[in-house]
Image (cartoon, rainbow, N blue to C red; front, side):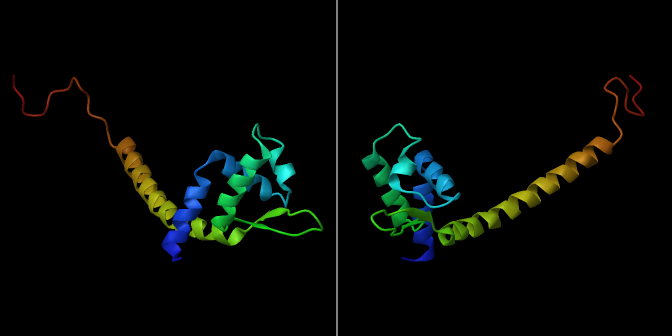
Length: 123
């Protein structure tokens, strides 16, 4: 799978709010499926399906701790997505800085009165 396809899979996985919440929870440390399912009003099999999507995207991995299979966050894929987003953040930040400068310039220009006549107008 090339980088573009991996990025598409990551963004598709993160498009769902439940999966984003699972990623946020795993950012605090590994957890079992039971622990991950607790705050959600859905079945454990439904949570497991979300976890499989995140695993396929490379965002999480399954560990082994005796009989448990705790999930943990894999930061590498998030870092790839962050690098991609960072390029566009810099572009937009530059656009906003130019808009701020224009706004500042417009605010410091002397204001023309709506009621004053232009010079040379004799009517």
